[in-house]
Length: 139
Image (cartoon, rainbow, N blue to C red):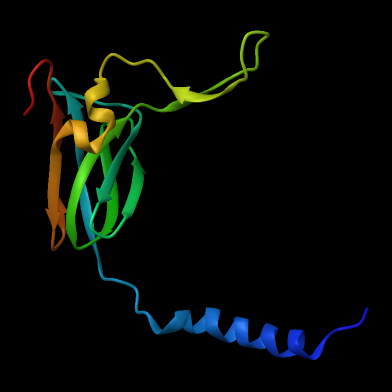
């Protein structure tokens, strides 16, 4: 195998840049914890997602069986959504399989989107943020 001179220089340079991280320090993160419930009953499965439309940062965090979640987030304002877990659907003669949200009664579809849920939180330090979804109107 013949290696070109450009490749010999490019490889160490790319390793060096990846180690340095291009000089950008990682943003400080804060612990956000809380519980997710529906009509005052804990949600036992699914995810809670935090989306910062200013920075484009979005990340989903697992909801534990007791309704709790734990997240590490950079400072900023976030829209919040709650999604049911996904399930895998097998291929059938009528359609291709894939993943879809599990049908649950305790996470109304309006909470699946941060825009529709109207839930927001401002993060500037460690915070407890409990989410109680309600039937009918918004809380």
